Image: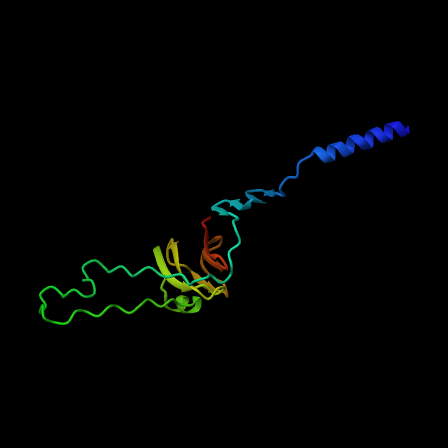
Length: 178
């Protein structure tokens, strides 16, 4: 009896010693929804496919603030410093346009009139207080616009929305179309 117990405990100890350590991974499956947490986070549902990869941790305060790209002139408008067509060549050159000022989420929501299309806007990240260039698409004119501390949500009806959420790493745009 003692021999069997000793032999069994040695076999069990050998099994634990030879097993390799694995990474912790969680997968939750429900009807129409799958959430996987492991090396990154992945959420799959009807109309949503969100993947957030993990990487090296970034500091909340960047070493230097990001710079926004220079504004592109509209077609048919001359560049600063060039005379207007048909203008006097001895006239002084046009002044440079004023720099673009990033807006807070509340200022943006108050002044922006949403319509269908793609947009590129300079907004202040409310978490890091740094300007960032936000790109997003809207499918049409929303029924309601909700502004929270760290996000803007354009609601189009039951189960349809476009969300711009800010965090310490930047912003994430998600949408759901049912």
